Length: 364
Image (cartoon, rainbow, N blue to C red; front, top):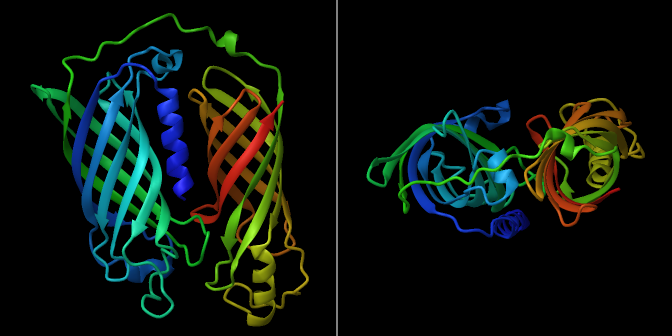
């Protein structure tokens, strides 16, 4: 998932090309691993703790969307977490983030996307109990919700709140149950500025963003492996066709269809037809069609050239009884032009990741 970090960093520094002020924050945290599956019970043996370091740049309103989103910050961060578990070891992560502010800028919400590295990945011989991390390098996403107060003592301030951090490889390779950690945070911030000055202008009216219905075609690809280790990684090809309608400054609604050619399912169907694993005790024909089709609704949150896309779909064609009938997708998109976009995202069935998708699409 190294491409995630490069993509985010490139888009951040392209988007922000104005004079800014900056600050750092350093925080410690301690929490609990969320037991999202009974199969990870042996990986929960203590209270994970660690620290988070961040470097942040403030926006001042030079671009219209800065004011529309209440002058967010952007930045980079590093965090370290010790899971207090022999099989999981420790993880390191680096990522790019946005800070959004609410309630007179005293409530901070941060979303970060980046890459993580574990000290103890799954190994068939030496660490076969680590069913959470099938690869050494993984995707990392974390969220912060915090009270933040700057300049309490000259340029020094405090912040405290709640953190959720997630590590998984998007099922590029099995096993990949992933780990979600909830934690409380406490830290300090220090800024190189006297006072943040905001540039304010009259925002365009909602009607100025009105568009006709647009039609999109998206091609998504990558590699994935079935839920059983050592079945082998296989290429997948996901095709999407959908219509969208912009309904304001920030929101676009979507409706469309997906067609999935997930070749790892071919291998898994052959395995199920002879192995009868848990959940597939009945006979399965090895020639069962692995292809699937779904209908979905979605929403796109427009920031600038960046957009956060969320979709929820339902399989209308799924001959092989695999996972549940509802799927979700979260994608970070970047509009190269008004008609051409690219993105990186994750397709899941609730908490179970199926595929990390690289996207290329057109909007007409």
